[in-house]
Length: 242
Image 1 (cartoon, rainbow, N blue to C red):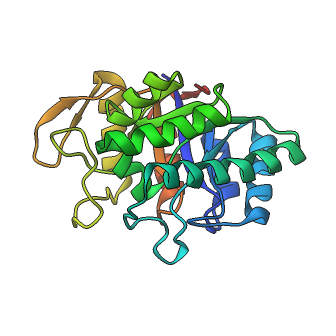
Image 2 (cartoon, helix red, strand yellow):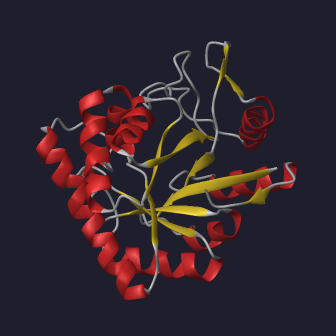
Image 3 (cartoon, helix red, strand yellow):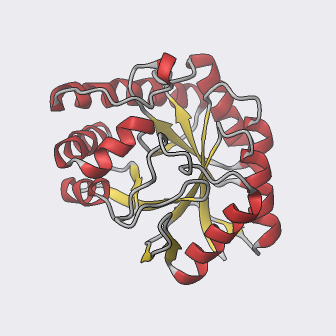
């Protein structure tokens, strides 16, 4: 099977280098929800060593909460929030002679955009105006995808290996005690189902269709590396950038 496997990195964890051989795309924290210019540089260097696509992972300016608490901003404020983080990423990419390949919002910003048209529009417009050639990663089948398509961006439907799903195709909120998949066997089972059937079994047991162009494993999870190792061991997986 050929698939793009992505991971959120540069967030202060100690497993980034170990994870790199198992992925084809990295979403690098831009210094707002996590990281700083030094972690961005180090993560880009790792991407270049392993031929991993460099992506920006903009989030709310809220390190104490890791960007996972909703912040209510106007469309103009959201636009500037994303633009400033793309400027940081692009500057360091230029310094390192790396190509900025894609953008994937982080945490609460991602989840809010997935179900809110105005937020999705503001984020997509910021990305398009910054560089219309950037690829936009968004929750599969959500408003993130439709609004980014509407402004002219190339989009990628993203699914998650380590998160549970609701019947409407959204991720189970992290406040729920079953939001995260915590063992490798279940992660592998979900990835296999998505790749072979184009479907996922929701937390309630309902099976729903799920378009998949890239699969995410969260790099900040304590079992991120075992999950990725398990996926590769169980599936004849060929990594390919989108």
